[in-house]
Length: 149
Image 1: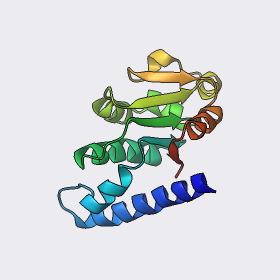
Image 2: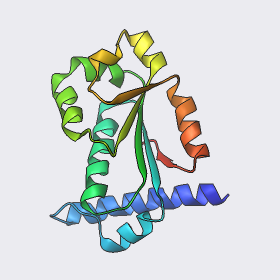
Image 3: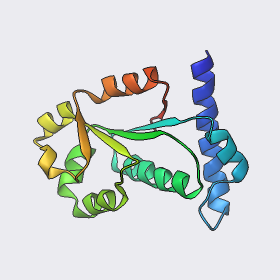
Image 4: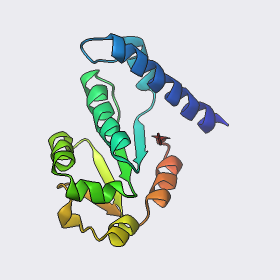
């Protein structure tokens, strides 16, 4: 019950922060929202399409820019977007631009195998996990607040 409340609270804060951000020209999150988000040290994003993938990277940048303090931020990727990352140079370059040491991007080995993509086809720094869904369960068990848009 507590974890459900925490997760729903995080979703509400992120939705609220999106509204605040759209009104804020500096693209930073309101300080009161930052204070709330600082209570959650581990954040995860699950994505299987390009738009949420881009959003996950942009949210990471926005949280950093707003000085949200978190220990871990992980994006878990599965589905057809895995092939898109390989084939779409603009998407590949976008991801490469935002990769840094504070960010973990996990990619599903099942998707890689089914779509004929290798780790070498992906931006540097991607971590291959056996199964994206199992990884999301693992993140939740580790206390991450995970958002899957």
